[in-house]
Structures are given as C-alpha cells and as structure tokens.
Image (cartoon, rainbow, N blue to C red; front, side, top):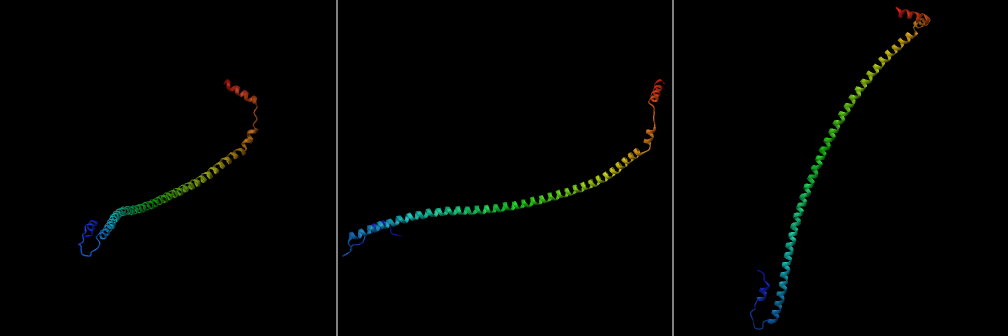
Length: 171
C-alpha cells in the first residue's frame, strides 16, 4: 500500500546520538508532504479528466457506431431504391415497346384498310365514269338523232290549235 501524506506526517524516527537535526528533518518532511499532497491531487484530477475523456470517447464511439450503421442502412436503402427504379424502368420500357408494337400494328392494319378502300373507290369511280360516259353518249345520241329535225319540220297554225281547243271545250 502506498504512503499517504498522513503516514509521512506521523512518521517518527528513533533518536540516536549524533542524529540528524530534527528541525531540518521536519522541514524536509513538511515539504515532502506538501509535494506529495500536490502530486496526489494532480493524480486525482488527471484520473477524473481521464474518466471524463473515456466517457466522451465512449459516447463518440457510440455515435460513430450509430453513424456507421446509419450509413450502411442508407447505402442499402439507396441500392434498393436503385434496383426498384431499374425494375420499374425495365417495366416501363417493356410496356412502351408493347404499346408501340400495338400502335404500329394498328396503323398498318388501318393503312391496309385505307388502301383497300382506295382501290374500291378507284373501281367505283371507273364504274361511275363508264356509266356516266355511257349516259352522256346516250344523251348525245338522242340529241344527234334525226327526230329533232323532224320536229322542226312540223308547222302548226296557232289558229288551228285554238279551234281544236274550242271544240274540245264544247264537247
């Protein structure tokens, strides 16, 4: 067990013939006691500081551990978000390609239908043109017919028409 300042203070030396000067020894012991008390106080202060610093280090170690865990969780969450975003992007692209294929197929189908309708309309227009031409030719034949000339040859007197009309009214 280490000496305490009280042990030094209470220490008594046996007196011998031609021994040391008692006052000098007591002064020296008083100085040793003061220095020893100061060293013990400094030691206690340093131990308290050390304990405080160890507590702070423990606290910071806890914070560091928490931060490391938080960083790991954040990285995992970021990876998960990234994976989900990639999956969603692939689904969106797949859906867009599917819709694009559907739209292209519908457009091709409509284009074919329109092309068929155009061909049908061309045929109908040819038939209409042929019939219209035949109608016009028939009308021209009627106009070119000699019967028109015969009509112009007829001359009726308007007085004959009046008398024929009066006869019809009396009868």
